[in-house]
Image 1: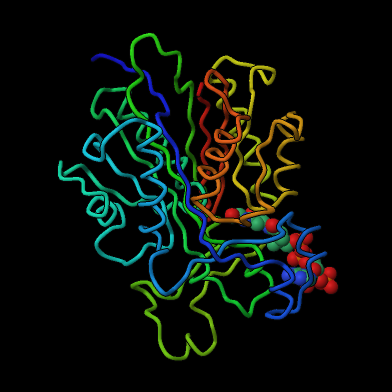
Image 2: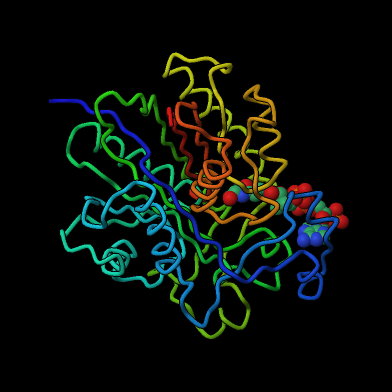
Length: 333
Ligand code: UT7
């Protein structure tokens, strides 16, 4: 079987127009700008309009249009859509198929949603690159798009201050002859025994939502922050080290780390554990908060757009989330 190399052909993002600052939150829950910024690094987050036009597949459509332009591709060049989200537009059909129609794709490309929470984009990136490497597909669109504002309890200060809405995408494809872009190594892992640290047990087949749940607010996402924090830093550092070792590279070779943006203190601790200086970590949590599957592709796109990440740079994606899922990827951009 012929092996191909993988190249990031284009990226895009969409941030909802409405911005909610920490100061705005002071009038919603008992909190303050200083606490939120010091404990999380967040200053503001973007929140989708519920009037329409900013639901997860709408954001993905906007972001994908930019990625297609950057990749110099047409919608029908896409062979696979992987849509990572825990807040899809609807339960059925999957968001990837809704996006396929919105993009005007008529080639019947495969469409799959990935429910791996904050690791969803990295899971998608790794799965699509494996399929490109074997020649099974040529170009894949990987989306991380979330409307978490719908699923957080706006009365719970432990969670509502942390999350935001947004979308990031990447189109990856077979690297052309002579290109030195590649995927060196990737890892995906999960430890289901930590599922209860971050869950949303009400609303599924086991416990459909009742009026009582709605009254209590028990149908929203709930998180044990301290437990998540500990596992997050350990796992992010372990997976980063795994992909670097597997690629036969050293820390000095890494130009940029694009970590999941859950908390600036998680990013700082992970950097220390890996042994990377903070100036190599791409950080934008102050502007968007935690947008789950969208954090890595948004941060990646922004760093490409502002010229930090350049062709030939070695970039490490590192994500962790509910499940508990985790994934890392090491690429030459
Ligand atoms: O993307 C998935 C992965 N996500 C994560 O991994 C998140 C990981 N966890 C975290 O980022 C942090 O644990 C949090 C930001 C969620 C919480 O930070 P913390 O330093 O663990 O704070 P804490 O929960 O221990 O709370 C410290 C204090 C408490 O008061 P007392 O008991 O010390 O008097 C809280 O009641 O801060 C209080 N507090 C708040 N105060 C103002 C908790 N939330 C708030 C708030 N505003 N929003």
